[in-house]
Length: 478
Image 1 (cartoon, rainbow, N blue to C red):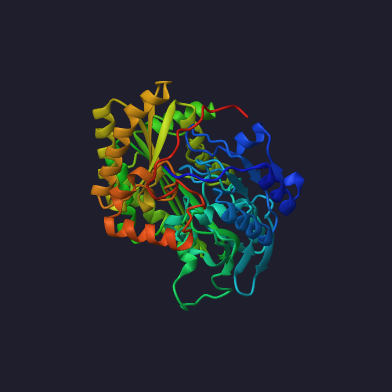
Image 2 (image 1 turned 45 degrees about the vertical axis):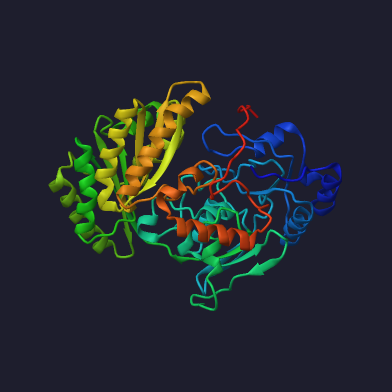
């Protein structure tokens, strides 16, 4: 197992000298907050948490850590679902929440420069005021931060048309594990000078460098939007409808699938009826564009396709309130599942036309291992969130029950040409499964890259690459 130096009173004093007394956290309740994210019931206690406000402060913290051999875990809002922000080896949690300024919105070049602590939804609202659009929209966009989105290469419902975070990151400023600062480019749409370090850092989960500034691409805001809901009496038919939509040569802005168990969880969570709650599955589809007449033609065509494939009905959200109502079911599912039982979420992704096979395989695995499963997700790009649940309150017993089922579900996805995570990252919770979808040569290349950036292994240890991680603490209410 990896080991690191202890955080001594002298190191705490040095951190206070860098960021100020008010921004060095040492009390247990606050430290336990920094030891959790939204990953199941995992919790670790850091020795100290620091909240720098500038790139220079981040650099000085990393130089201190490098000098003394201290583990450093970068942290944004703590909304991740794979344990990427958990300080599994204690040490220092470095929170970027004070680095929260939108530095520039460049309307001429359709770009924005931001610090990593900017809330994603805040950025989206700011650029929308200027008629611009930043499409990546994780479910937690009202609280998650751009830095975390870059670390995880986050997606969301609208990436089916608009792409992931990586498609909008043009350049970065970042701090190396030894404290050195570098930039990967500028306000450029074309830049092929040397290796693409920008894209190497996107999705690296804070294991290679700490992003302190990002230049992001923007696009014009679509003028019009339409939302449809189509219920089905068969999960297979609903999944096949996804393929039929693409065969119609229409690209939806969002295309989500929610199966019956997820609908039941949503009804319980919302405390109200939802349309067609007894359906075996529902598809939620959104179209957008700048030409209203063309959009309405596509809307009619998609509706016809869904009915022809077997939809029980096609409901159009004809008001903003109705649109919010239809989306509320899909958007509440993360919280709804948490209320059901202890769970682990498998962030599977397969080619979109393999979604029916994935859902069928998941049900077979659940039956074999005697567990519950709740599946939903971004069907348009094949990214299905499979939640496996057990009512057993004992953590070790749950582990023995769920882990074989989880590995079997991931194997189903990989056998279909898929992967073990589509948008949540590997973190510490999925690292044991990485070799299922990456061959030994690729694994060796990733180890070499990690060693080149971080030869001492100080930055976000225990993440992405398989390693032995200490057991979680009992979860405390903070």
